Picture 1 (cartoon, rainbow, N blue to C red):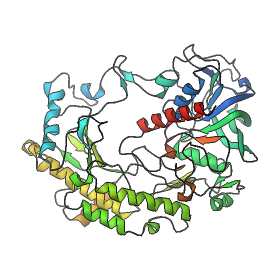
Picture 2 (picture 1 turned 90 degrees about the vertical axis):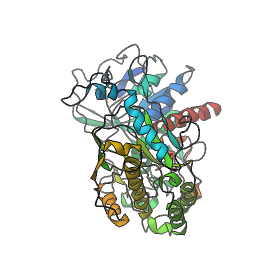
Picture 3 (picture 1 turned 60 degrees about the vertical axis):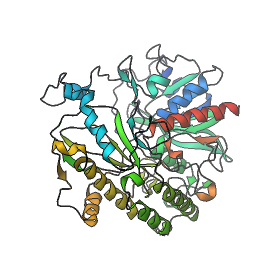
Length: 500
């Protein structure tokens, strides 16, 4: 997952200028935990070493150090941004083009009412009490915003700033290379630091546990580089297999989207309102046919031919559950936020994709190259069938409801594209494979179903090693992933504390 305050783990090239490369290990500010920029200032060992300073890593580090008794080191590959960029105004309110929107009433909340009310004309759509009521529908939803400070609320502001703990260290611009294993026990990690164009390997010990929180792209990469993963892939990369765990890096999933372009001459507000709808509401006439098609599908044929039998078994179990979910009115498959510009790219998000990809080490240069990320988006053809129904629903919403009086016009796929096969061609051409919600590559499933971690988030076959991030989610939730990852980190903290 994207590391949300320290930058990408390894997806960007880092350029850092040091005036004094070996400065003293003092906090950049009293509000921070002990921030280190060089390994020479590290302790000899820590109780817990956490790899990744994002949503999960910072939350977990906060919880594990709050008693003051246990030491934690967070290792992050990205840089420390000294101060967040805060905009104390709504860019959409003021406008990001030549117009000045100012305070026109049509751009305040009443301008959103027609879009909300139009859903009352759509059969099967409910207005749920709120987004946490367990029902699919149309509702207001919260955002990650501090209403008092008028700034973004995220892992850094909630679990790093204002912490000044002597038992909590964080080191940045340090790329974890592999986990140190001693007879099947994780005892530390090796990370790389580059100073004055010289790269050195540094080993740090973990007295209690190593915890991966590097996200769905890099947690499986680090496991594979440590000899934990599919034996065939490790062998191709020249890595000795210590634990043959076929599920590592498999079951990769994200939220694909397709965005029909529809113009509308009416003004809208930028509000926290959206629709999260089940397939019976999206496609009253076809959802059962789609579910039956999934029931009858050869699921193994939707995965690469060399897929391990345990991973196939896990995929088959997921597809059985998702076929039932397609029939459920309260399992959201479709989401659309009621925001946009005069030409609306209505992002129709597929919340439960049936396709699965993979994240594996680059076998030609495993330690230096980025992992190979294969989305395999829409590789299961039923995903395209579902997205076709999304486009048709979005059309009905604009043209068959009270919104029709505003004269919307379709730009793409275009009013001439009416047959399902033609809409499917459009979908396969323009669909985006990601909403930046990668997950599933270290799935919390039974080992015989391709699982990587157990219910305690412990990696199968390795002692004192856990994974705590979006990679453990076996099937994506029908929502954005950030809230789920916070919950995973909080639960992990409770589990670890209970086992001390």
